[in-house]
Length: 257
Ligand code: SF4
Image 1: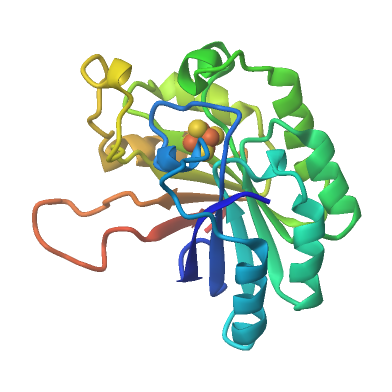
Image 2: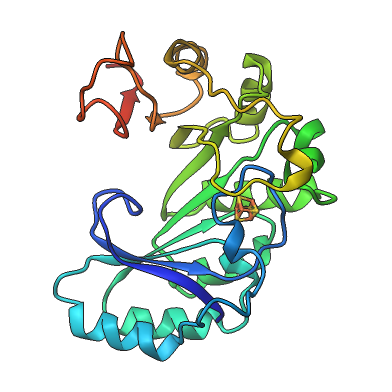
């Protein structure tokens, strides 16, 4: 495992659990809005964090933690992923993986070997825009296989769409259609990254959609998912009025409520 960084204690990365979040180094995509750009390549400037360091921390603090989150970069491209997760399992900690869904075989193996309890799978956009958004020659078959695998599994799951400023309502609906029938859809507000690739700096629209856009999506999609969560969406009528508890909350719509 190549580990680029970690948060020793997070209250937001694993729903309902206190978790240590581990940022894997390296990714097979190059999304222009990536917030973990520094983790995409192994930087000689970054001090590597060893597996031993992480495991010994988890051992010492396991009574204070519920779980571990592996996020990106992309965890499924890591050599030694299963061996690392076996060590986490021995500590009786729950395991969540955030993935872009490009390796259904890895996900199948993790599920078969009971090495994951929660999968958050990113839906990056409508099929015709995936290559432009991810910066790589996107293979939709791998994604659709991963979606089917996760949907048909017993584990906790969410399908996440980061609602990019460039998306129309139809773009998001077409993207969400890839996972119709799933238990949980998360519509996540876009946040401009601190580090922007030079080529994208001037040509992009970086203005996030308003809350009304998300609420319209929620209405349109409510018959297709058991639960729809709006994440990091500011739902205040006047977003300029300070109200510390109204931002960065998950707003869930349970269908039928
Ligand atoms: S898949 Fe995730 S980690 Fe990889 S480039 Fe895209 S946003 Fe960044």
